[in-house]
Length: 451
Image (cartoon, rainbow, N blue to C red; front, side, top):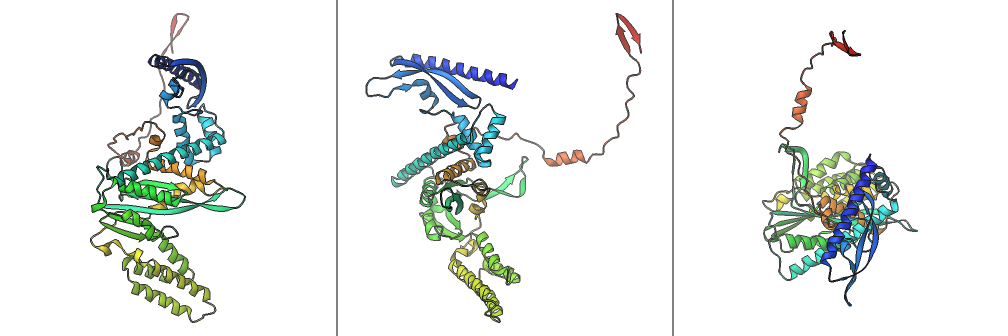
């Protein structure tokens, strides 16, 4: 049954394309029709073949297929934009081989894992080219002062971090995927009835940029930020782990023209560093040191804890040599990054808008796809997959693939799970046994018999 309807859909689409080409032929009457050529495209319904007219134009102009130009099909492009979107949309959640099997099982489309990989590469290249074009246009608008209607917000957060992945080749080496996220803070998620969800938040107007070239990623994020936001009354807060390429001076560009710029060290990395250095020798002092750093922001208290640890270890210098070396490294790390640990309330009447350190927590989707299970990537393939994930998170994958964006709104639901729990808690009535039919009639050979 399903094969019949799929075949019927293919014939209907082929007939519609032929009719559309006939209508376009009436509009292109001034051009000479050279010949008709058949073309086969791969759609969500499978392969569809149709015949369209090839037009010759006067000398100096390019010959063309009117139907292909009208539909937006590029030369030598076999996959339709919708199928390309479906493949790209599913690619972050599974491997290419698994995705090819799923499409073969659930749709009339038969794809190899090489075809899926090619679609992902082409889609990533298309997204990258368009994003670079948008950044160039934004830069031109900024330099020529042609910006209008920029948003004004009290806080703007910029977080950045890098993710390592294994690169394919003769030698085992690691490539870096750089990520920058720009958002306006965080807010609580709401249920369908409008009530906030406990312990769950979402970023406000978040925009993510990824790529294997750190400078290019920072440039795109910088152009987006200054083209879409008026920073004269905005406090810009940047956040990173202060690693190589992510120090405070690299984020200074984002605070250009802002009311105030603050760079903070990601607290997750600081907590992990403290636990790594002290978990073996002095686990009981971890909380005191965390309180001195984050709550009190007192270097005097930090020195007091570190001095206490060093004095305890100095009783056996030879046996505690490695432990003392770890403590010295921790002291140097805190001293080097102390200015980036300054809390927001230290700078005046500022509050935490939320969403600080989201680059680290946002690695999950990227690391799940790029790392583990013996995965190796080319730089181009890893970047293409990351750009698709970016578009999926930014809700603009349809835009970059030239498809109309459809915003599906959830139906209003006047109740939530409490109504279902109320039904489940109602006492159940015991069912009464059914005795069946006691009196009936049976018709046989035109006669009725009582039973």
